[in-house]
Image (cartoon, rainbow, N blue to C red; front, side):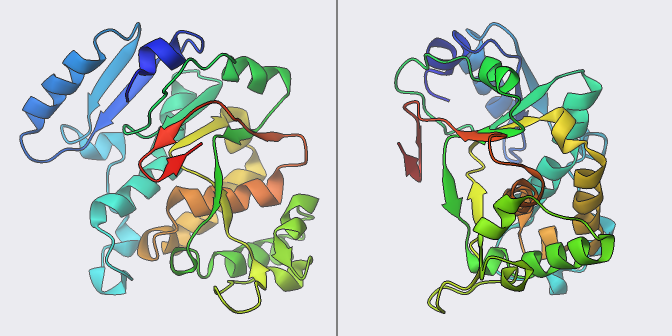
Amino acid sequence: MTLLSRNFISTNPADVFIFSVVAKERKKHVAALAACLDPLPRFHLVDMLEHPKDLGWVTPRNVRDRTLWLDEWSEEVRRMGHWRLTSQFQLARDLGYIYLLQVDDDSEFPSLVQENLFETMRRDHLKIAGRGILPDEYFVTRGLPELARYFLVTEQIEPSTLLLKHCYPPSLDGLFSSVDGEGNAGWDRASFYGNFVIYSIDFVYEPIVQRFVNLVLQTGAHFRFRWNEQATLGMVWHMFVREGEYKVFDFPYRHQDFTG
């Protein structure tokens, strides 16, 4: 997290939680990480492997049959998505935080972030914001649009008009799994890039949002097909966030597969 303290925390005061899941020589890793982050004003280093069940670093019971898992993604990657959908938000809520910034440990802030992003979230009543948007892959989103359509139809919910802008045709008829090279029909799979996203905790715990997230969790598809939190919360964004309630920031930022 290069220059995190100097170029981000200095203008965006925050409590920093580092969740470590390194299995090999983790005591050395945790000690090295603690030494690296010592200049940060308020940070908490959490060794997830000390108490994995208490911290939610688990494989859900309904997806323990590995023969049902698709693709080559590791169990750790799948657990990460499950944890990000559940435990991280519960922890933030229990500790009384208003916003949660989800940021990867290989994110870089090459120059000073002038804007206080949390103040912008509060001032503009934003529910979600991030540094970049990308179309996720078909093979890690298949089935999600169909589940969302089932939810909207059975619950008789009118989604945000934003959803239709991400479907072709622009109606519930366009809410299906799209395949690259097939006329760009269906849901466009756009999501906030998970390496830097800010969520409003109040928004995440709106009853309608939790009902959809719980449906996803009950299917186990977020784990089996690796929807993870990125695609799932991308769909939440489209269904339940209105125009003017989200933002894409443009400060200098780098990630191993994102530069802007």
